[in-house]
Length: 179
Image (cartoon, rainbow, N blue to C red; front, top):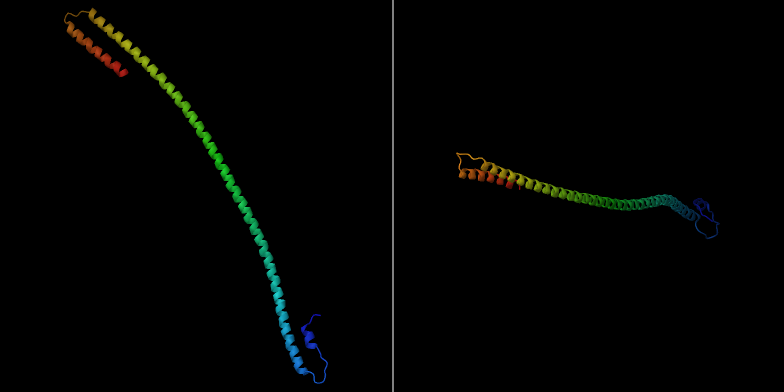
């Protein structure tokens, strides 16, 4: 049986001889009823507060779960981003290595071609120098022959040999410059 403050206030006791003073009992019951009413109000306020706090606790619990899920998703996304960045970096490095290899191969091929061209040009130069030497020597021999065939009365043999040696020296200098 649930006791209310009204029950306490309206409770009537039977009287007996030499019993308690009814005014004192009534006063005590009224003060008990007032205390009980205060306790009921406090209890009611505390229940409301408990309901309010339980609601807030549920809200905070759901927010905590949402935050944990968000955090887990952020960790997954971050991990995936790092992994993707690593894969992309490896791909870039691999492509760079391939390009470097291609550039090196092309450079080696070009170097070989240039060396071959240099060898060919040197051979051509040597051939031209030899032909020029032969041509100049034959021209020099022709000049000598012509000088001996033509006799100038005013020139003596010493002058002819000096002029011939001078021309020969000039031709030899030209040949050295060609080499």
